[in-house]
Length: 185
Image 1 (tube, rainbow, N blue to C red):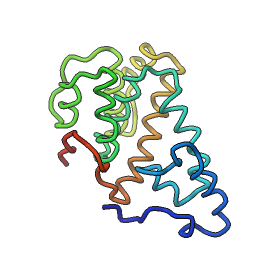
Image 2 (image 1 turned 45 degrees about the horizontal axis):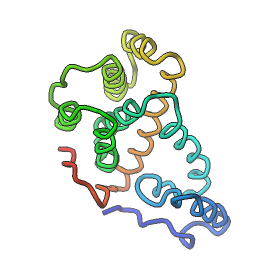
Image 3 (image 1 turned 30 degrees about the vertical axis):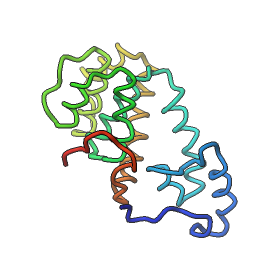
């Protein structure tokens, strides 16, 4: 259960209620659930963050399975139950191997990875554990995804780190509906 109640029009400052109404009227009610709902407590922040979220999540040049892998790697490395469980089934649907996903979840040795998978996992693991990326890993990500892909990958992981930080700070927990095993923490 979240330590922060769901944002409502009445719970935000009066001068922000018009912006709250604007983000709430978006298709699907931007920030209706999950970490984006946490951002709704700052309607202007959510209004500004939503276009970046939509681009990175749905429109950037990275293949779908790469985006999902980046999200679940970020979730695993930040111990974010909500994001893990919101994206692991999508990762499986995108073509990610069950053994890869299960090994990430359980922090077990990973199976043989494709160059794309290896680049994502190594980049995320290095950054989230050392707050840096080695030249070798940087070169690998650059070779696999190019300049635009490198920037989009690191930005996607950084954005999901922000969402994970918010989800974990308010103890968002698990999405309501999930068939996946939670992360062992």
